[in-house]
Length: 335
Ligand SMILES: NC(=O)c1ccc[n+]([C@@H]2O[C@H](COP(=O)([O-])OP(=O)(O)OC[C@H]3O[C@@H](n4cnc5c(N)ncnc54)[C@H](O)[C@@H]3O)[C@@H](O)[C@H]2O)c1
Image 1: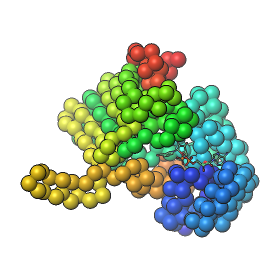
Image 2: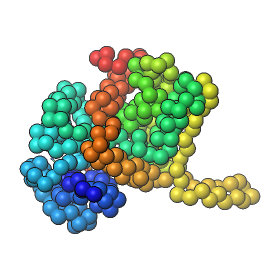
Image 3: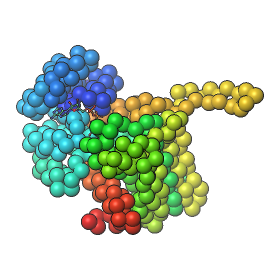
Image 4: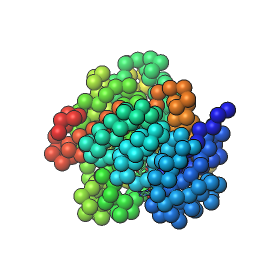
């Protein structure tokens, strides 16, 4: 088997998840180098995952002729410029979501990828989760008939620090963006219009930053289906990730994953496990699977979430934000 050589840019939370997959879970990959603007973070990551080279400057990765592909896992504002540089260096690109919060920057980055003819995959890992993939396949197989309603519940166990909220782009671009992509994935249809309501019910500090922590978004799809997504930054019982798609012949539902299926029955009732704590636990397998599919896409040209998914999810998130601010339904791409 020919191994594909990777460079990792950004050694934070998600960077380390991908470092783990590339090092231990994917024999078809070899992680040759890691960079982080904080060199100590790059060095610590290199030591932890036995990566041969650690750099402070990502250019060292892009200039390395042995590296075939990069995983861009640094902070969001770096994604678009790094994508452009990586494309110009002829590297295939796996980039965490979102490419940018600004549409002009997304267009520039996507144009550079197109021009270079390199493969691009965006980190919509939930498409590679076994539950959601099965839901998607069920809809595609026609078993539930024509989709009428999709319902997505997506609640975090606890809000991130306010420092994170400040730079996040807001709940729709930071958190619900995964759910907007999931809505498109499950229905196989584009979202045409959204209407969002929001509130600050978890942490007033989030409100002071101009963001919300609780949201309901109604969606209209171009195949006629409707959808609703409910988001919260805090569910006291853990990471709540469920979906139902209802159609003319029935419905399909995916429930939360739990650490075990043990239920303890007693005189007061029946107690079972809380959902897996957060995304690192719940989506661990999907993070490895998305990179496996990226490698397959490079080798065999198979389809992966790329430019269209990157752009359309941001367009929906921006429309949701606009809807919240103007208190009216907003057509996608309207403003
Ligand atoms: N797919 C998912 O489920 C998922 C989950 C978490 C985060 N993310 C995305 O991944 C990205 C990183 O998030 P995180 O939670 O790992 O953040 P993080 O803050 O833990 O890590 C970001 C890392 O990037 C480094 N960095 C910043 N500027 C850099 C530069 N110029 N060059 C190299 N490194 C640089 C930082 O030093 C830090 O180590 C964000 O865009 C986020 O939206 C996606």
